Image (cartoon, each protein chain N blue to C red):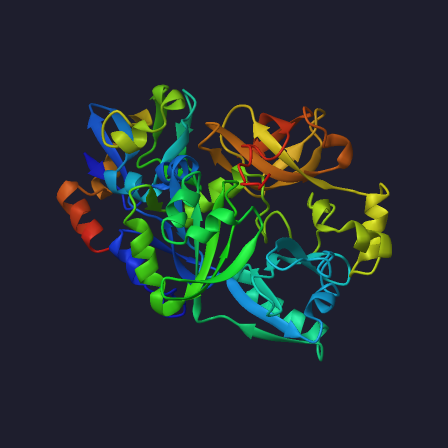
Length: 370
Length: 121
């Protein structure tokens, strides 16, 4: 599939050499799977270490006189309190408290904030931040940098073989250091629910580092297909599906991303709506569903209550390789959001039984320093 | 065995046709995790959805290559959907139809024509 309108990451040739099936995604040609296929790649990541090319994501530096304080004007997170070496999951909010994107923001060093945003949103995100924070910050896009994710229970042992210092990082910690002969940013983070790392490095060395990591027999390349099934099992929302500009952090089940201090101060975009929602005026909330029999429920499938009334829609769903059952996320009224609530999903006109279950569907195994 | 441009295959024995998807289609779909086969007695017109195959990523329709009535469905696929990947042109069949219009078979490709069609994709 060759489409000149689609961009390629620095690893495009490496993907082809590994037999990847390339698909258009967020304006890029990306590997949806390699020769092993989605199920095998998914299981490999849960049991060993999977290597992902996520260079399509938007990396940038946010600099200014007070970049941490400025960034609080567009997010509900505590960034003034973000210590050097820490990474935080946060949300870019519009003036109505709707989610423009979800992102990672960290302090690998003292050089402002390091941001990673979703590929499909990056142009809009950086424009939004630049406009909202005009005069306060400067954004430097890191388009000449690739981003690799190494995820899975063996990721730490593999990466420590190349960069011993990563053994000292805890989950959601980030650092800039010298490795592979250059400056890289390594964060202990990811979107699979497993322990793992994200490595930002110059495009020129991306394919060498990719090949070096793949030389380790514990590591295999993993495509976007398994990335999606892994994040679904981990209960993590996919922007544009489980979160969008009409959905608030509370509705999306991301209340943890609204810091206590910011909540009390009510000083972030859409804070009045979020205050009302926290006080109980909430019409919908994201839940996890286990489809008890029948076909997997996909995005758009209607959710009905016991009486057959439509109460919501599935926003992402599929087959869970770990649980060998169909799982989904969707939005329902809070009264129907309790774990154990019996619901149904409508698939090709047929009603199939489902049940609200706790997320993550598969337990997270992040590395926490004691 | 005959093939359609949508990558179904059909094997005819008297007035009974067995339907499945080609090896090429199974490879394109990737890991099959669920198959919905038709109910017995269902009367299908050529082009109707005969089965639905779900891979990890997406659902795909399998279309009836000819018109007919469903006289048997492959019940083994409910417990073992991966058979569609392992043996797509054999035990991974979906349904058997009682053909109502044998003339519809004439528009289908034989193996040589299908291979040429795949080469042109």
